[in-house]
Amino acid sequence: MKKKLGYEIELPNRVKRYIKKIKDKRFKQLIVEAIFQDIPSNPEHGTVKHGDLAGIYTWNITYQKSMYRIAYSIINGKVIVIILVGSHESFYDQLKKLQ
Image (cartoon, rainbow, N blue to C red; front, side, top):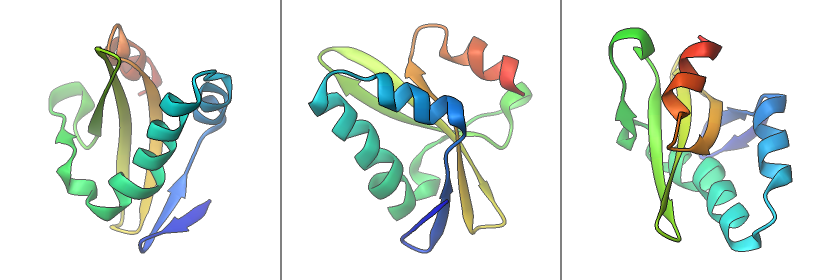
């Protein structure tokens, strides 16, 4: 767990593995900045999900005309848990499987 801007950031192993596998340095930097700077600076700015995914926020990133998502939840206003990072394609199906 790392503390950023008053929030503890939790990264499950699947998220750490995803980030580690990214070859493109610029894209990896965008993901890391989103997780450790952008999201903690304004976590409610993400899109709030409803229905099966209630309580989950998603942060959108566009890189080289491709769309990517970061799914996270906020626990007790103090901890941001990054649930999933991935391309928009089949992202929500993967996210539902994790619930």
